[in-house]
Image (cartoon, rainbow, N blue to C red; front, side, top):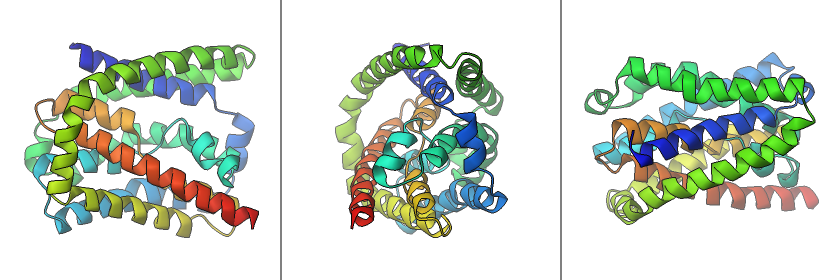
Length: 279
């Protein structure tokens, strides 16, 4: 395993461990008490956003591997820092944001292997060995998540200290990943911009925000949280797939470019929601 791939594996494993350590089961039960809300969340993140991704990349007729990077993000929902970016600080629901940080990546372990051959082009899908891909999802995504949930449930006092340690490791692994991907960033942004990929990515992000808001229900804080969380896609999982299966293409760098765009847009939108709430 190359240093780049090892750094991505450590990054995603810490990503998922952190999500498990932050989970409060009381908040989780309250947030997902409504079957209708749960159905809308799943529809938005696992059906509508991938479908939007496919339609937009076809509309803009993007280069194959620019489209691949964008679609890998579209099919990979959830990030562990949703409570920070989509919780009470942004006028949203801390409980729902925490729940989504755990549930969305967990469910994606099942949905992504199904979605990959449906949304990627035949040539791009041929790069992925499904059996090893599923094993990687189980070992690198599901196992750390379960460990984090177990530690939080059995020893809530240890979780905050371990949370800090995992965060440090996550940041260090992220720096290493950036070290390998940043040199490709210029090429990626050029490819994204030159192929209209920048406009395509921004359009997907804006549509994600709208879909999340519309499906968030009548409660304002839930609408805010679902709007922002639908924007935020799992860079750890998308980068893992891209680096392990498309290492000789711009796909991984496009994933990073997508993350930058969604992160900036989500933060700006969060400030708008917060000011709206204050007024």
